[in-house]
Image 1: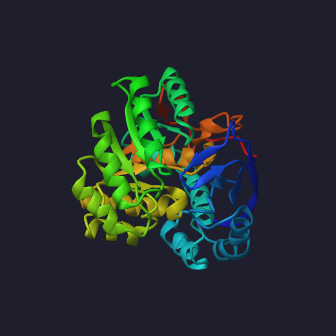
Image 2 (image 1 turned 90 degrees about the horizontal axis):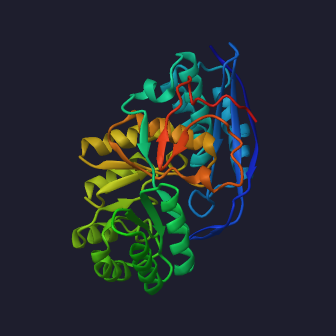
Length: 355
Protein backbone atom coordinates (compact mmCIF):
# COMPACT_ATOMS: atom_id res chain seq x y z
CA UNK A 1 0.00 0.00 0.00
CA UNK A 2 1.36 3.41 -0.98
CA UNK A 3 0.33 7.02 -0.51
CA UNK A 4 -0.53 8.43 -3.92
CA UNK A 5 -2.03 11.82 -3.10
CA UNK A 6 -2.82 14.31 -0.34
CA UNK A 7 -5.65 16.78 -0.79
CA UNK A 8 -6.43 19.78 1.40
CA UNK A 9 -9.19 22.34 1.35
CA UNK A 10 -10.59 25.04 3.64
CA UNK A 11 -12.95 23.96 6.39
CA UNK A 12 -14.85 27.12 7.38
CA UNK A 13 -17.30 26.77 10.24
CA UNK A 14 -19.73 29.12 11.97
CA UNK A 15 -19.88 29.39 15.76
CA UNK A 16 -23.18 29.87 17.53
CA UNK A 17 -21.55 32.73 19.48
CA UNK A 18 -18.03 34.15 19.95
CA UNK A 19 -15.70 31.88 21.93
CA UNK A 20 -13.79 34.06 24.39
CA UNK A 21 -10.70 33.24 26.46
CA UNK A 22 -8.05 35.35 28.20
CA UNK A 23 -6.25 35.45 24.84
CA UNK A 24 -9.22 37.22 23.24
CA UNK A 25 -12.38 36.40 21.25
CA UNK A 26 -12.65 33.91 18.42
CA UNK A 27 -15.42 34.91 16.03
CA UNK A 28 -14.87 32.51 13.15
CA UNK A 29 -13.21 29.18 12.52
CA UNK A 30 -11.13 28.53 9.42
CA UNK A 31 -9.63 25.07 9.72
CA UNK A 32 -8.25 22.74 7.04
CA UNK A 33 -9.69 19.44 5.82
CA UNK A 34 -7.14 16.76 4.84
CA UNK A 35 -7.44 13.59 2.76
CA UNK A 36 -4.72 11.01 2.14
CA UNK A 37 -5.33 8.68 -0.82
CA UNK A 38 -3.66 5.28 -1.23
CA UNK A 39 -3.20 3.00 -4.20
CA UNK A 40 -5.56 0.39 -2.71
CA UNK A 41 -8.38 2.97 -2.57
CA UNK A 42 -8.28 3.51 1.19
CA UNK A 43 -8.75 7.18 2.03
CA UNK A 44 -7.85 8.68 5.38
CA UNK A 45 -9.37 11.94 6.57
CA UNK A 46 -7.99 14.47 9.01
CA UNK A 47 -8.32 18.04 10.18
CA UNK A 48 -5.88 20.79 11.04
CA UNK A 49 -7.22 23.32 13.51
CA UNK A 50 -5.18 26.25 14.75
CA UNK A 51 -5.11 29.25 17.02
CA UNK A 52 -2.70 31.91 15.68
CA UNK A 53 -2.01 33.16 19.20
CA UNK A 54 -1.06 29.64 20.32
CA UNK A 55 0.34 27.71 17.36
CA UNK A 56 1.34 30.65 15.14
CA UNK A 57 -0.40 29.13 12.12
CA UNK A 58 -3.14 30.22 9.74
CA UNK A 59 -5.38 28.39 7.31
CA UNK A 60 -3.15 29.54 4.44
CA UNK A 61 0.09 28.51 6.15
CA UNK A 62 -1.29 25.06 6.99
CA UNK A 63 -2.34 24.38 3.42
CA UNK A 64 1.04 25.60 2.16
CA UNK A 65 2.98 23.49 4.66
CA UNK A 66 1.11 20.34 3.67
CA UNK A 67 1.19 20.94 -0.10
CA UNK A 68 4.73 22.23 -0.40
CA UNK A 69 6.66 20.46 2.35
CA UNK A 70 4.86 17.44 3.83
CA UNK A 71 3.18 16.01 0.73
CA UNK A 72 6.36 15.73 -1.39
CA UNK A 73 8.23 13.70 1.24
CA UNK A 74 5.53 11.11 1.98
CA UNK A 75 4.12 10.43 -1.48
CA UNK A 76 5.05 6.83 -2.29
CA UNK A 77 5.43 5.82 1.35
CA UNK A 78 3.51 2.97 2.95
CA UNK A 79 1.24 4.43 5.68
CA UNK A 80 1.67 1.23 7.68
CA UNK A 81 5.32 2.21 8.18
CA UNK A 82 4.15 4.82 10.64
CA UNK A 83 7.51 5.41 12.36
CA UNK A 84 9.21 6.09 9.04
CA UNK A 85 6.42 8.29 7.69
CA UNK A 86 6.14 10.32 10.90
CA UNK A 87 9.90 10.92 10.86
CA UNK A 88 9.60 12.32 7.34
CA UNK A 89 6.72 14.57 8.38
CA UNK A 90 8.68 15.83 11.38
CA UNK A 91 11.74 16.70 9.31
CA UNK A 92 9.82 18.21 6.40
CA UNK A 93 9.32 21.60 8.06
CA UNK A 94 10.01 23.14 11.46
CA UNK A 95 7.00 23.69 13.72
CA UNK A 96 3.66 23.83 11.87
CA UNK A 97 2.29 21.27 14.33
CA UNK A 98 -1.36 21.77 13.37
CA UNK A 99 -0.50 21.07 9.73
CA UNK A 100 1.35 17.94 10.78
CA UNK A 101 -1.55 16.89 13.01
CA UNK A 102 -4.03 16.94 10.14
CA UNK A 103 -1.84 14.61 8.10
CA UNK A 104 -1.11 12.42 11.12
CA UNK A 105 -4.82 11.98 11.85
CA UNK A 106 -5.50 10.93 8.26
CA UNK A 107 -2.65 8.38 8.47
CA UNK A 108 -4.09 6.83 11.61
CA UNK A 109 -7.54 6.75 10.01
CA UNK A 110 -6.03 4.68 7.20
CA UNK A 111 -4.40 2.30 9.69
CA UNK A 112 -7.68 1.65 11.47
CA UNK A 113 -9.45 1.08 8.15
CA UNK A 114 -6.70 -1.21 6.89
CA UNK A 115 -6.81 -3.39 10.00
CA UNK A 116 -10.63 -3.12 10.07
CA UNK A 117 -10.93 -1.93 13.69
CA UNK A 118 -11.89 1.34 15.40
CA UNK A 119 -8.71 3.33 15.92
CA UNK A 120 -8.95 3.36 19.73
CA UNK A 121 -8.89 -0.44 19.75
CA UNK A 122 -5.83 -0.49 17.53
CA UNK A 123 -4.04 1.96 19.83
CA UNK A 124 -4.92 0.37 23.15
CA UNK A 125 -8.66 -0.05 23.61
CA UNK A 126 -8.82 0.90 27.28
CA UNK A 127 -12.41 2.22 27.26
CA UNK A 128 -15.23 2.87 24.81
CA UNK A 129 -16.73 5.92 26.52
CA UNK A 130 -15.61 8.68 28.85
CA UNK A 131 -16.80 11.98 30.31
CA UNK A 132 -15.95 15.41 28.94
CA UNK A 133 -16.33 18.81 30.49
CA UNK A 134 -17.99 21.71 28.69
CA UNK A 135 -16.36 25.12 28.48
CA UNK A 136 -18.03 28.27 29.77
CA UNK A 137 -16.64 31.06 27.58
CA UNK A 138 -15.23 34.19 29.23
CA UNK A 139 -17.87 36.86 29.62
CA UNK A 140 -19.61 39.04 32.17
CA UNK A 141 -20.33 37.06 35.38
CA UNK A 142 -24.11 37.09 34.90
CA UNK A 143 -23.82 35.73 31.34
CA UNK A 144 -21.42 33.01 32.48
CA UNK A 145 -23.83 31.99 35.25
CA UNK A 146 -26.63 31.60 32.70
CA UNK A 147 -24.36 29.60 30.39
CA UNK A 148 -23.31 27.36 33.27
CA UNK A 149 -26.91 26.70 34.29
CA UNK A 150 -27.81 25.83 30.70
CA UNK A 151 -24.88 23.38 30.50
CA UNK A 152 -25.99 21.66 33.68
CA UNK A 153 -29.55 21.40 32.34
CA UNK A 154 -28.12 19.60 29.31
CA UNK A 155 -26.56 16.98 31.56
CA UNK A 156 -22.95 18.15 31.87
CA UNK A 157 -21.45 17.43 35.28
CA UNK A 158 -18.08 19.13 34.73
CA UNK A 159 -17.70 22.80 33.80
CA UNK A 160 -14.48 24.36 32.55
CA UNK A 161 -14.67 28.03 33.45
CA UNK A 162 -12.59 30.46 31.41
CA UNK A 163 -10.89 33.12 33.55
CA UNK A 164 -7.66 35.11 33.40
CA UNK A 165 -8.45 38.73 32.46
CA UNK A 166 -9.54 40.49 35.66
CA UNK A 167 -8.88 38.70 39.00
CA UNK A 168 -11.66 40.59 40.77
CA UNK A 169 -14.19 39.66 38.11
CA UNK A 170 -12.78 36.15 37.98
CA UNK A 171 -13.59 35.77 41.68
CA UNK A 172 -17.15 36.92 41.04
CA UNK A 173 -17.48 34.59 38.05
CA UNK A 174 -16.48 31.50 40.00
CA UNK A 175 -18.35 32.46 43.18
CA UNK A 176 -21.60 33.17 41.33
CA UNK A 177 -21.39 30.05 39.19
CA UNK A 178 -20.77 27.81 42.20
CA UNK A 179 -23.63 29.39 44.13
CA UNK A 180 -26.00 28.84 41.20
CA UNK A 181 -25.11 25.28 40.19
CA UNK A 182 -24.71 23.72 43.63
CA UNK A 183 -22.02 21.42 44.96
CA UNK A 184 -22.54 18.32 42.82
CA UNK A 185 -21.04 19.83 39.64
CA UNK A 186 -17.26 19.87 39.21
CA UNK A 187 -15.59 23.17 38.32
CA UNK A 188 -12.28 23.43 36.48
CA UNK A 189 -10.58 26.78 35.89
CA UNK A 190 -8.56 27.71 32.81
CA UNK A 191 -6.72 31.04 32.90
CA UNK A 192 -5.04 30.62 29.48
CA UNK A 193 -1.81 32.25 30.78
CA UNK A 194 -3.76 35.31 31.93
CA UNK A 195 -2.48 35.84 35.49
CA UNK A 196 0.83 36.61 37.09
CA UNK A 197 1.98 34.55 40.07
CA UNK A 198 0.73 36.98 42.73
CA UNK A 199 -2.69 37.24 41.11
CA UNK A 200 -3.02 33.47 40.78
CA UNK A 201 -1.92 32.79 44.34
CA UNK A 202 -4.15 35.45 45.90
CA UNK A 203 -7.21 34.54 43.88
CA UNK A 204 -6.93 30.79 44.32
CA UNK A 205 -6.55 31.16 48.07
CA UNK A 206 -9.86 33.07 48.10
CA UNK A 207 -11.50 30.45 45.87
CA UNK A 208 -10.49 27.43 47.97
CA UNK A 209 -13.91 27.21 49.61
CA UNK A 210 -15.63 26.91 46.22
CA UNK A 211 -14.26 23.42 45.58
CA UNK A 212 -12.21 23.87 42.41
CA UNK A 213 -11.11 20.57 40.84
CA UNK A 214 -8.02 21.90 39.03
CA UNK A 215 -6.34 25.02 37.65
CA UNK A 216 -5.07 25.05 34.07
CA UNK A 217 -2.19 27.21 32.81
CA UNK A 218 -2.49 30.13 35.27
CA UNK A 219 0.69 31.90 34.07
CA UNK A 220 2.52 32.61 30.80
CA UNK A 221 3.74 29.50 29.00
CA UNK A 222 7.48 30.10 29.48
CA UNK A 223 7.19 30.58 33.25
CA UNK A 224 7.80 27.01 34.30
CA UNK A 225 9.22 28.12 37.64
CA UNK A 226 5.98 30.02 38.21
CA UNK A 227 3.95 26.88 37.57
CA UNK A 228 6.15 24.99 40.00
CA UNK A 229 5.79 27.71 42.65
CA UNK A 230 2.01 27.65 42.40
CA UNK A 231 1.97 23.88 42.49
CA UNK A 232 3.93 23.96 45.76
CA UNK A 233 1.76 26.69 47.28
CA UNK A 234 -1.71 25.53 46.30
CA UNK A 235 -3.54 22.38 47.31
CA UNK A 236 -5.39 21.88 44.01
CA UNK A 237 -3.79 20.25 40.93
CA UNK A 238 -1.96 22.51 38.46
CA UNK A 239 -2.31 21.56 34.78
CA UNK A 240 0.26 22.55 32.14
CA UNK A 241 -1.31 23.32 28.76
CA UNK A 242 0.38 26.01 26.66
CA UNK A 243 3.65 25.15 28.43
CA UNK A 244 3.70 21.72 26.78
CA UNK A 245 3.77 21.39 23.01
CA UNK A 246 6.16 18.49 22.56
CA UNK A 247 7.99 15.66 24.27
CA UNK A 248 10.84 17.95 25.33
CA UNK A 249 8.44 20.37 27.01
CA UNK A 250 6.84 17.45 28.84
CA UNK A 251 10.23 16.20 30.00
CA UNK A 252 11.07 19.67 31.31
CA UNK A 253 7.81 19.91 33.26
CA UNK A 254 8.42 16.46 34.72
CA UNK A 255 12.08 17.16 35.57
CA UNK A 256 11.14 20.33 37.45
CA UNK A 257 8.02 18.85 39.11
CA UNK A 258 6.20 21.88 37.74
CA UNK A 259 2.70 20.45 37.21
CA UNK A 260 0.38 17.75 38.46
CA UNK A 261 -1.07 17.03 35.03
CA UNK A 262 -0.36 17.69 31.34
CA UNK A 263 -3.03 18.76 28.87
CA UNK A 264 -2.26 17.14 25.51
CA UNK A 265 -3.74 18.62 22.35
CA UNK A 266 -3.17 16.98 18.99
CA UNK A 267 -2.83 20.38 17.34
CA UNK A 268 -0.05 21.43 19.70
CA UNK A 269 2.07 18.30 19.44
CA UNK A 270 1.62 17.33 15.78
CA UNK A 271 -0.93 14.55 16.11
CA UNK A 272 -1.59 11.16 17.63
CA UNK A 273 1.92 9.78 17.13
CA UNK A 274 3.54 12.44 19.32
CA UNK A 275 0.61 12.51 21.75
CA UNK A 276 1.27 8.86 22.52
CA UNK A 277 4.91 9.68 23.31
CA UNK A 278 3.99 12.52 25.67
CA UNK A 279 1.41 10.37 27.44
CA UNK A 280 3.79 7.46 27.94
CA UNK A 281 6.54 9.69 29.30
CA UNK A 282 4.08 11.30 31.70
CA UNK A 283 2.72 7.93 32.77
CA UNK A 284 6.23 6.68 33.52
CA UNK A 285 6.70 9.74 35.75
CA UNK A 286 3.41 9.15 37.55
CA UNK A 287 1.68 12.16 35.96
CA UNK A 288 -1.81 11.78 34.53
CA UNK A 289 -2.81 13.48 31.30
CA UNK A 290 -5.81 15.39 30.09
CA UNK A 291 -6.89 15.52 26.45
CA UNK A 292 -7.95 18.92 25.15
CA UNK A 293 -8.77 20.61 21.86
CA UNK A 294 -8.72 23.89 20.00
CA UNK A 295 -11.96 24.99 18.32
CA UNK A 296 -12.13 21.89 16.14
CA UNK A 297 -14.84 20.05 14.25
CA UNK A 298 -15.93 16.54 15.00
CA UNK A 299 -13.25 15.18 12.65
CA UNK A 300 -10.21 16.00 14.77
CA UNK A 301 -12.11 15.79 18.06
CA UNK A 302 -13.09 12.24 17.10
CA UNK A 303 -9.38 11.56 16.53
CA UNK A 304 -8.54 13.02 19.95
CA UNK A 305 -11.28 10.87 21.47
CA UNK A 306 -9.77 7.72 19.97
CA UNK A 307 -6.46 8.66 21.57
CA UNK A 308 -8.18 9.33 24.92
CA UNK A 309 -10.15 6.08 24.84
CA UNK A 310 -7.05 4.02 24.05
CA UNK A 311 -4.98 4.81 27.14
CA UNK A 312 -5.71 4.57 30.87
CA UNK A 313 -3.42 7.49 31.73
CA UNK A 314 -5.75 9.92 29.93
CA UNK A 315 -8.01 10.57 32.91
CA UNK A 316 -9.69 13.88 32.04
CA UNK A 317 -11.15 15.26 28.82
CA UNK A 318 -12.03 18.66 27.41
CA UNK A 319 -13.42 17.67 24.01
CA UNK A 320 -16.50 19.84 23.64
CA UNK A 321 -15.70 22.12 20.69
CA UNK A 322 -18.04 20.45 18.12
CA UNK A 323 -20.91 21.56 20.33
CA UNK A 324 -20.11 25.23 19.66
CA UNK A 325 -20.86 25.18 15.93
CA UNK A 326 -24.13 26.18 14.30
CA UNK A 327 -24.47 22.79 12.61
CA UNK A 328 -23.03 19.30 12.89
CA UNK A 329 -21.96 18.44 9.36
CA UNK A 330 -20.51 15.04 10.38
CA UNK A 331 -23.33 12.53 11.02
CA UNK A 332 -21.09 9.84 12.54
CA UNK A 333 -17.86 9.76 14.55
CA UNK A 334 -18.17 10.21 18.30
CA UNK A 335 -21.57 10.66 19.94
CA UNK A 336 -22.34 13.03 22.83
CA UNK A 337 -24.82 12.06 25.52
CA UNK A 338 -25.27 13.94 28.80
CA UNK A 339 -21.60 14.87 29.04
CA UNK A 340 -20.39 11.45 27.91
CA UNK A 341 -18.52 10.70 24.70
CA UNK A 342 -19.23 7.32 23.12
CA UNK A 343 -16.80 5.87 20.61
CA UNK A 344 -17.81 4.72 17.12
CA UNK A 345 -17.67 1.03 16.30
CA UNK A 346 -16.70 1.32 12.63
CA UNK A 347 -13.06 1.12 11.42
CA UNK A 348 -10.57 3.98 11.64
CA UNK A 349 -11.97 7.23 12.96
CA UNK A 350 -15.47 5.96 12.28
CA UNK A 351 -16.31 8.91 10.05
CA UNK A 352 -17.73 7.92 6.66
CA UNK A 353 -18.76 11.34 5.39
CA UNK A 354 -16.16 13.08 3.24
CA UNK A 355 -16.49 16.77 2.51
